[in-house]
Image (cartoon, rainbow, N blue to C red):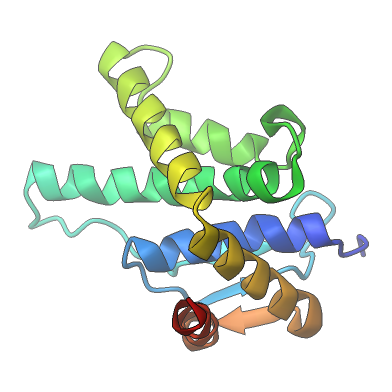
Length: 161
């Protein structure tokens, strides 16, 4: 099994915090390695856009999914100073590119740039940084957290402000 390190915890905490910010359910977040290539996981269940939703609602669902995907790399970069291309989020970026239909779509590129800017701006704020650190610390201690545990940690940090 791969060594669990703090950058893994920060990465997964970034996904978990963003999941809650955008209103997604979170089954669990873990830094337990399932195989050599997966060092952790933030699992939002088998949630997918409802087929009865409008195109606008489906588009918002996918935009939120992209925010979650981009948030692990943002957390590592902002909190640990790791250059984005050196984080372990390459697969996350590739999935976000699929959502935005890159490199084939100029509008998709614009939306991807917007999503990236939103995540970086949000995670640069003191409260979000503290929430990510607190969730990462809890992951280092417990290895896996549930939705209610992440919410409790985030609310405790909000009360400190």
